[in-house]
Image (cartoon, rainbow, N blue to C red):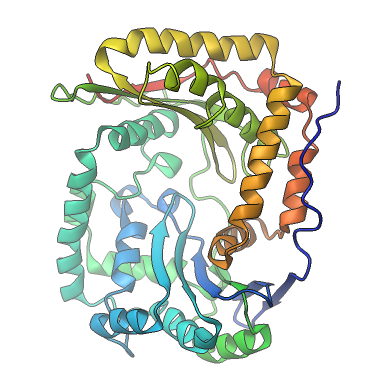
Amino acid sequence: MNAVNSVGFGNVSTGIEFRQQTLPNGLQIVAELMPGAYTAAFGYFVRSGARDETDAQAGLSHFLEHMVFKGTSQRSAAQVNRELDELGGQSNAYTSEEQTVYYATVLPKYQRRIVDLLSDLMQPTLAPQDFETERLVILEEIAKYEDQPPFGAFERSMEMRFGHQGLGRRILGTTQSIKTMTAAAMRSYFQQRYLPSNMVLAAAGNVDFEALVQQAGSLTAYWPTASASDSLRFPACDQPPADVQSPPLQRGDTSMAYVIRLADAPSSTDPDHIAMRLLATIIGDDSGSRFFWELIDSGRADAAATWTQEFLDCGLFMLYLSCDRNRLDGNLRLIDRIVSQVRQQGVTNEELEQAINKTTSGLVMHSERPGNRLFSLGSRWLMKQEYLSVDQTIAKYRQVDVAAVQHVLERFDLTTKIEVHADR
């Protein structure tokens, strides 16, 4: 096998220091110290997501994320928003299948204030009156996404692969589950999941680590110290459940066709996940991929892409197509031909070299901002208790050769798929 020649970046992580400490209450603090950075990013990463919910709790993790910003014993919702504005940085939160994250990027001089604010948010009031108001907001959000065909197709593809629990659970929940949810159920869920032992406080950029540890220790000293289980409540099933039916999405009012396909792929802890990421780039990246030249550059489709979704115990190879309804059948046949050709003939050294260079260049550019580094740092430590510098990550990509890609092609059948249409 010919060696792949990749662009070198030197030692990207020069001057960057990783620090980690665990407080007596179980809260883990991790940081990438970048003394030359102009900003500092901080975030609480909570191991609580849609896959942890029961039927009655569907959508609760996301609902709780909204409620966290509705006030604490120290601050009203208005004060929270006003203080975030005063700090002048970027802040937000999100919920996924496996975690909920609250984060902010500010100037280094505001470290103490933002850590105080974020820590306070982790002990919300969860007032019943706010719960009822926010219920309406969540229901509006569900209705909004129901009007977006690709979103609905993605949800249904996950349900068909995993069933209606675990990774198949809708992050927003359903209209029915949100309507019947109670404030008491949310408070109970919060007490079970938002424990120091189930959280990571991450920081990246121009950070004073000693001051961070001291302040966090003081602010969280009174938090409950019970242990949260790190076992998966609903492990991913090996095969799609036979009894799960997903009705087609009737979107006759659209001129476009939308299709989601998925096949099995390596998990986030599987060594093969890097090779599969590169394979997805070769097949369906937004520029220079096989899909790009055959479907996008030719004008056959508006969008055609492949990417991977990685979870603790499984992974997915995702495919998305958006095109004129009249071109749909022909485009799907072309996609089948491209994927089959890759499976039968493999990829070339030139394709792999391009994918590695593109990916590693993107990693370096992405890593220049502390706010970007925060997410990989916090998520990786929360889920896998692992730290990788940018240089170590780049090295993992450079180690992939054509044989490694061929191995994942033989191990995972990308032609075995779940397919959901959002146009008919």
